[in-house]
Picture 1 (cartoon, helix red, strand yellow):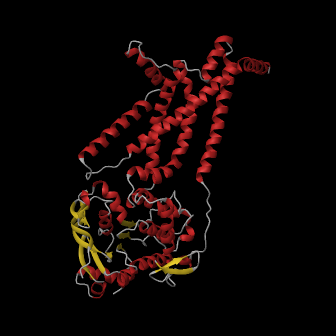
Picture 2: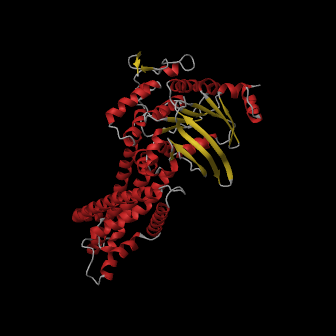
Picture 3: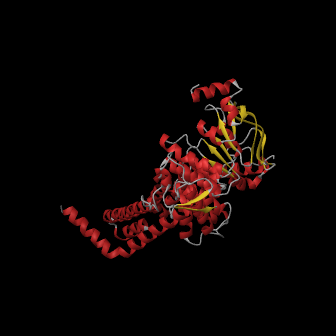
Length: 278
Length: 247
């Protein structure tokens, strides 16, 4: 039992002394995860939509080649960033500039480099999620949109993506929570996130385990709150299941019994009366 | 007086892989025509309509809309599709939009009308199909027959020159077929040009002015409903109608 009271004491001591460091780290972690996820989603949506641009033999040769090239590039991007660890991507991006320019050019802020790495990484995952969401929407919806004369971008904007978002949203939440945790690897390029606070504190106090306990609780708090908020968002997106009827539907009631309205006349439901010729 | 042709289909062929679905189809849709396309399942009726709306790319032959080959439309294909309305067997209403929004989306984005104008017009059309009371409902809250009436309104809201119906009642419960056919009959009587792929022989006989019998990707016989239903010339037509009409 004495070990636990010892731990409690150590944790409390660390909290009281170093809470500004922990809080600053938490703030940076949340901010980086948030900005990275938002930018990543934008990349994902653009790439996902571009990846589903249809083409067929009717299209001019130039368009077909362009679409093929675009798909290849997006494919390569997804495979590259999904297939390598983020910690290495960070090192690559952060040190490549000074290496190639002999130190003349470098990232002026570690923030810029971190945001770039996180959003590009998230974008790779989101591209696939968006593509999956689009494919999962009933193909009849695309045909309906084409049949009324919408082009690909309009069909995506007003019909397909609003429906795809239902299956994409859980993935966005997933990515955000993954980012909350995985931004911890950014200490490699000396980004001062929540995990960097741990390293700082440990360096000064050598209290490895008590600080790790604080980290655990801290990360779990952040992810649990995020999960809760994301659930709420999903529920709001579902929308109301009820709707308001203006009046009863005459045709359903009279289906097959008699015809209403008489041909050539305009039937105004609200007046329950026939109006003049249209 | 010769009516002006809206659509002319010339030597149209379509193959899926090595499987020919349409073979050398020739026919015309003129103003005011109500054409019923009948025939056994898999005879290419739906594919014919889908080729006309460019949902499928024809393998050979041409389709002329007001004398212009639709293969050479380029960017005009979008306004062409608005002029040639389409009603699907599976409705294909936009599930994320209300009934009203389903009918205004095309008006706003394709015809570039403003919101008030298109809502007013949509309401007018929706009253004609008896769906105005449901303008705030979403498609998943409607019955099949109601969905199809909204789908008809959505096509009509764009003021099309012709509406193509692809088996509009085949996915409906029997008791809901009547309300959709009533709406279509009204449209026909008001002079709307229509091409209807259907298995409703009574509708084909009473409402249309021309009936096309297709089998195996070929137009076997074509004529007035009187000729085709009472005195079919082709053996296949006779056999098909016999099965349907119990003769």
